[in-house]
Image (cartoon, rainbow, N blue to C red; front, side, top):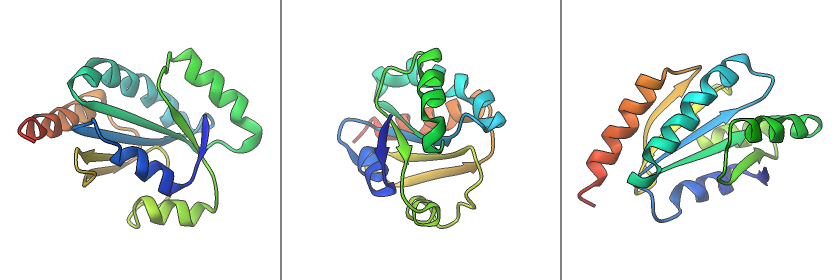
Length: 142
């Protein structure tokens, strides 16, 4: 887990090489986050070779970072992940002013870094996979 401001998370979204980027803000103490997590990892594994990037942002507090690291390891996360730092409201409003701050929060971007979709609360594998695949398909021509 690398400490990151919202600006760093947005920079990760805009890094070249992806046609679709899904940002998920989660925490180990959030039950819906833990329930949704295996689906996120599954989508990442299925679609990473097609231009998909998953950006995970833990909202865990400093004293629960060891649990967050263990959680990521248990789920086989083998790509860079972040821990939210700084003021909560600044982070929330920089990511999306419509976000209430509820977790999990998931943001889907196209390959240009334009936000396409946003969800608060747990989403199903079917919903997330379908939406990501649509963005990947649209990005094939770019």
